[in-house]
Amino acid sequence: MKPLSEFNAGILPPLPQLLQPALQESAEVFFQCPGEDYPISKAIHLSRLAAFYPKCRECPHNGHTANLSPEIIERLKQTQRSRASAQNPFTQEGVRGVYLNQINRTQAAHIAGAFSTIL
Image (cartoon, rainbow, N blue to C red; front, side):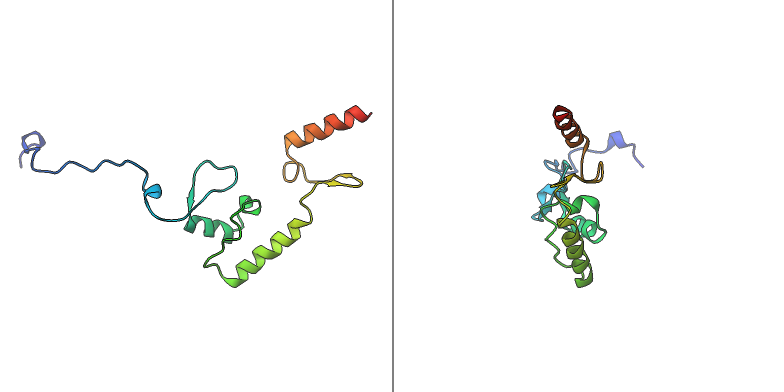
């Protein structure tokens, strides 16, 4: 067998240049989870919904259930209904919520600052 340097380079066609990632070249619908910098395919979106991925709770695309089973769709709707009432941490009696789940660090700092000005 000849060494690689002896092969005629003109025989083989040049390799195609990849201009865009394969995910962006397709005509597939893309979704993007809240807080993430990259798009995901429909298959990943549906698998995350079926697995009750935490970011799906706040996602504007959580209604796109496509081929999921009716049982999973019903469980997703039940989860959304139960969480809909607990969305607003501000009540007439004060502020209520689980730290880092319903109230983040910035909100907690603003609430503490506002409370300290009242004292």
